[in-house]
Length: 374
Ligand SMILES: [Zn+2]
Ligand SMILES: [Zn+2]
Image (tube, rainbow, N blue to C red; front, side):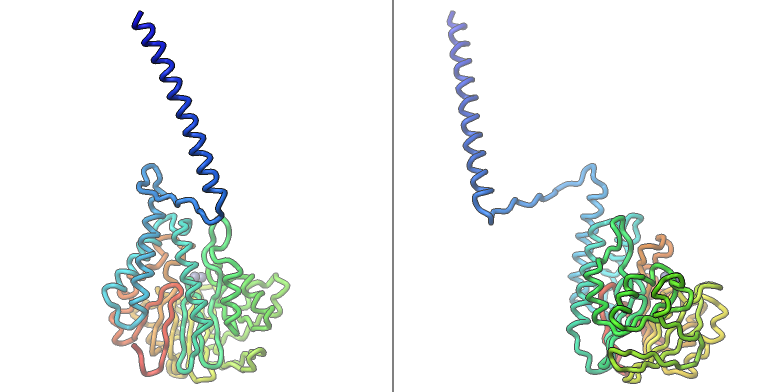
């Protein structure tokens, strides 16, 4: 009998406990409800992920983020210079490691890094008052912005690599870049050097766009693009109506491989500084004119596609620049073998004694002062 009574009491006790738990749960729910929705300021606590088991992509992205955050910190205190210290060399290698991975362009951490780097360049271009020499920014891939006292010009400006959602850099951001530039020079038709929307935006602002003749021939705006004659040694005038400047430009008749027209612009600014950007120059026959450029022009800076040095630095022996800025590294549209890491540049360009060179990463700048390289 005792057993039955005990069991009854026991059931009553269990039921009471369940009812109490329901009441507590309700009270807690009500308290949370009031707490969460009664005050606008209360924000949910962000989830902190402490393991990535079963989530390889999440892991790689997080590791990329940790790596690129450290890179940001390292390059802040170690800006581009002729002498690269250990910290900067390590930072460059860390970028190469992140970007030389099959799915790198799909990683949000990589996209965020590029966006932040470009934002930093925009801020710099907008706020830097150039009183002497020139300040050169590298944007994505082989895009550059050069600012002197009198004006600002751009090479191969485009919105970065494509993701499944579209271009990684949005129009609003690129509009801010374009607003700062007075003239756009396009080397050749490949998609990692051109951007139709960018070109049209320049034209809409009455700023010249210069390109080889085989680009956008079927587009309604084709007639507005300038196609100067591709001729080595001939200085041609490009009018910048908004600035009231007539610019001296040589459009060297370069090629990527045998057949792709690749304009190698040689631009002399009103301050007397001369800049060259080589696009994707790579054609043995063009050494006919490349070998002699330095006989006619005093070139200050060459911004060259990083693999264009062969054989035996012949491109630079032709241009004879005071400074080289290698480019086209980590173009995400290229397969990994031709994605061109930063670490190969010292192998290709040597110790910089014959031809000084400086490495820029996305969004970085270098102030070029003739006779005062640092
Ligand atoms: Zn190309
Ligand atoms: Zn290219």
